[in-house]
Length: 264
Ligand code: SAH
Image (cartoon, rainbow, N blue to C red; front, side, top):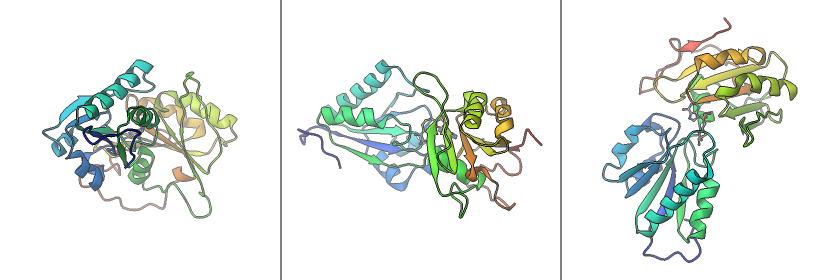
């Protein structure tokens, strides 16, 4: 528990919960239990509507946004969190993936601390991890993959940025910028034949995966258009030995039916 300055017992509190990347059963057990305590749930667009079953009596408010929201949007969310907590509610702020990864958590924690409202953060499965699981490609590899970096390709100014600081570089919010991302990666010193794996809607029944190199990365744009996409570059994109993939319980199985290889 993080108690804000001046928190008093009559106010409610806010629980940030990572919903995981897709299907409702990817939320953690703790997340599901805390969600069930909610009076009010402020949720993002990327969270699974099936999660409502965990808190059917709560008031669900959609505060979803894509990409950088304007300051009014974030200010409104902050204000809603404070308002409902001040009314004495247990407020759940349900975020896609993990709240600490590209989730604007800092702004919301700061707003609550300033208002003296206690909060708690429950972690979730971030999209990079879900993509690794979907493709059975570990992000770390003995000998060749000692470090992993999570980056957003999108900057506030709209520029695409990329580096070569880790053996495996994972990019969020890059689906619309693949050609520019490929150029930036090349500028950063990644060779043209570096493996790149694209996974969209990881963890959902319709997840899709495609394999590329830096040189052919832009070809993935059409295939994953309009879908949240993770771009994994380097060691973590290298396929492991061919093996049989068992379908997940919700029916998601990208092998062999959903694997797309535009280059082959
Ligand atoms: N907090 C989230 C990330 C939010 S930023 C997390 O931890 O996963 C939104 C970006 O996350 C999307 O643009 C996309 O790059 C990625 N993303 C979220 N869900 C995804 C999914 N199911 N499959 C692939 N990428 C996903």
